[in-house]
Image (tube, rainbow, N blue to C red; front, side, top):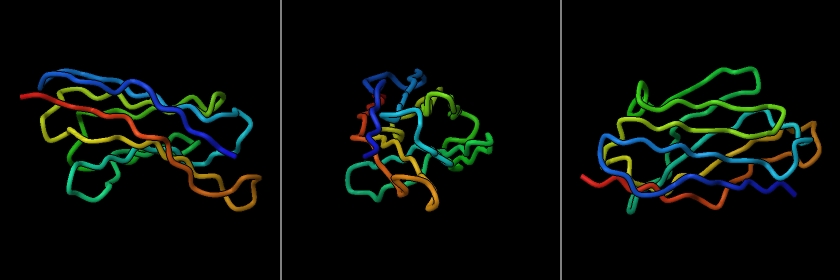
Length: 120
């Protein structure tokens, strides 16, 4: 089974930076897309950023220009560099990974969540 282990959340002042990391439990998994979602209290989970194995990136409008997603395909690891953080970025951030249907352990997987709190 695929496990995603997240690290790097915490408390930061507005304008500060944090870096999240998420590693899959095995580098041999065939993951075609990894990404980050977030969920603030009372709100729905939303996409923050995603990256394909080929390097194509997608960002939510609210974070474009401030956040950068990157990956290490050999390690099945994805990173989220968050700069110029705002109080409205406060949420639990979830790592997400997708394995295509033709590959072993196909499906969509989620990390346990990392709390990011931005104080004003």
